[in-house]
Amino acid sequence: HSNSIPNQVCGEHANCDLGIAVGGFSQGSQIVALAGDYDERVSAALLYGCGNFPNNGLLVGIRDMQCMNTVKLAKQRRRYFSGDNDGLFGQTYDGDHGTRSQMVEMSHYNCDTNGGAGDDNCLQHPESNANSPDPYTGGMIENIGGYYIVKGGVHGQFLDWANFTNPDLALPYYKSTHLDWLAATAKSTKPPLDEDERRVTLQMDLDHRWKFRETAPQGIFFEWAAAVNSRGVLGRRWIVAEGTTSARKTFSQVPTDVVGFRLTARTINAAFLDQVHVKEGRRVFENLSFGDNNNRGFCFSRNPSRDWSDCEGNISRTCIDFCTNGRWYDCGNGDANHEFSRCPVPI
Image (cartoon, rainbow, N blue to C red; front, side, top):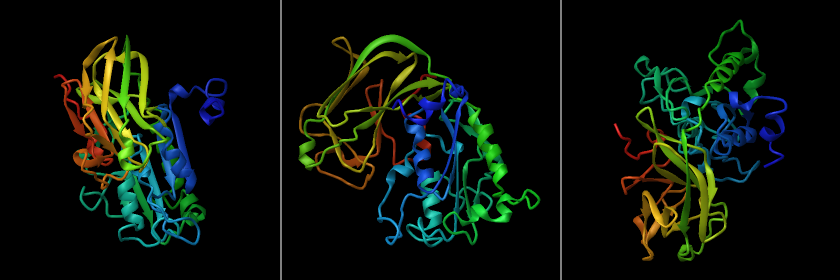
């Protein structure tokens, strides 16, 4: 959008190709957490008072925000801070929608199981896992994303505490430590995928969505996947099939070492995809042709527990990787193991 913050700032005032660091509090943290879905230059996020389930009905409507669990920006590039008594997100420390469970679901870190430094400080991880593959660049990155739960903190109150702003106390959640982390991480930027001049068209048939009496007005995310350092790295997210039952999108460039593409649900609303093909002229491009017009198809939803008998596997999925080997793979529900494409990469 021409009035977006990046478009107002980048170019004239800043070189955003060097990386964009974002930060926010409460609803602002939710907005910037999603920023990487729309601009691949967003390379690090510092998120205060964030959550995926506001459960204080007196202040806001109670709702399940699954989109907070499937943001594109890699988990190593996100840090979350919340109080253990957050009155908006969580209200209690533990439980199904407590502060801790929301931190685990959004961050994709769980220090109960990965041997980290306790349940509350989940920013330092085992030495054997000090560096990990970076889905953002395709290289390696220090594995120090995660979450920190501030004891005695309510929604944002800890931001004013002296031990948050006083460097002499050197507490784990001292703000400048994490602002330094934000700046350093954001500078590790994403090189563009190598591309070839190839004119291909993505064709999508959603003509049977009426079976669910729902529409997908927000469309579906599309990302090319390419082999980088022996991993399937995902490219820019595009919005496709927005408010239509027959979608086409033409690309003039395709990643050089393409291994497939990924489709990801944007909303809880069901999208029933009957067929999806990528064609170069009249020919199928790199075996990327899936589905038939037979009243069965691929079902997408941010709520993967939804299921219908006509979906492949009789379930809906958050995302699917469609691959040049002619097969497709379930990406999981924001599973950190699938931040890379599941399409096989040539060795």
